[in-house]
Image 1 (cartoon, rainbow, N blue to C red):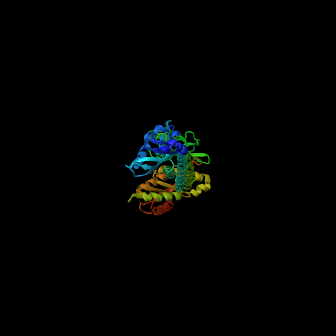
Image 2 (image 1 turned 90 degrees about the horizontal axis):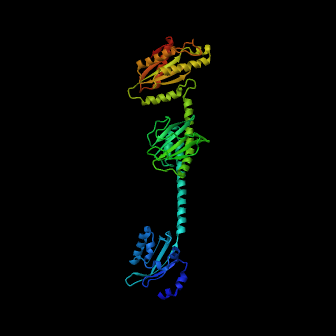
Image 3 (image 1 turned 135 degrees about the horizontal axis):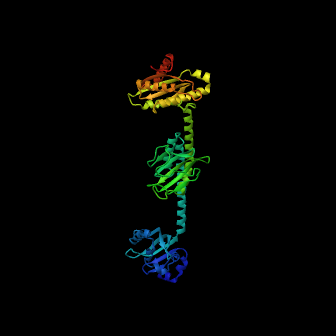
Length: 449
């Protein structure tokens, strides 16, 4: 071996191949060309000096393999670790060593192996891995978006839709608090919030931050560090329908610089669908409100009244009283025939307003049909209901129509009461019977069945 090494022919043979040979008995050494690339001469790393340039985080791995060879537990080992060049930069090396000879005591005496610089490969591998993770993250986010969108489309109540938007937004954007604002007639209203104590839906203003969207037509997301404690980051995303801003989705984080470009992009995609859901819910609410409200008097329609009455009765405490007033304008056909339908409409509006003014805020009132108005009084017994009916009757007598100040209007009122556990439809039916009794008794009166 000494003569072979001394001939210099081995070095010529393995030049450029990354192969090394080490004879520990004679300290003869043919270094790998990789060492020269790192900037070291052949004598710089004799013995075990090469271990001094191993990266500290990889040293335990290298020494572990070295111990296995020294103990005779293995005749070869390979691994990847980092070595520091003379320029101070670390390079990734794929290393393999094979024990060719051992001493009588079993100690390795002759090694052969090779070193391959895999730095560029590892960097490309890391780049590909990062790209894969990015693609995987985008795919997962797209799946989260799809799942969130599927859930969002099932809600038509604006407040519940906004609350669902906030819950589903967590699939896409991390936040510690969030709020949904709608833009109506140039004013912002917060309709849902999560993660902090803020005002009830419908209130203007926001005690935890400035109202979003000061620039009412701002259509791009806005990232800001201007937030109140304990929040350090804020992301505002416009909710849009056909290039028109209908509101804002606002996220807050307790972390500084919490929202990066990826969060902004994801939130914009989510906001496209959230805006559509919220817009549909607002339109549905408007159409429902229109269907539930009498176009002339502004009172609830009969259908809306029956629905609300059913809910009210279901929530009444056991043994609670319940009363109903059935109100009808006297000689209304005569008003229409003599003064015209415009005056008739004016009379209906005036009577409806007078009824609202004479009754409690918790009483349910609706235009039941034609010139009939029905009122439900939760918690009222016969005496309370009769007193309410009389207030209504007197208020109508005092009415004066601007277009016909000499016209005198009166109403007849039928009254009935029962228990909250009774079928409210039966109470309405009995109040209707009492109304006919009031009509037959001369009108402009209240009659208790």
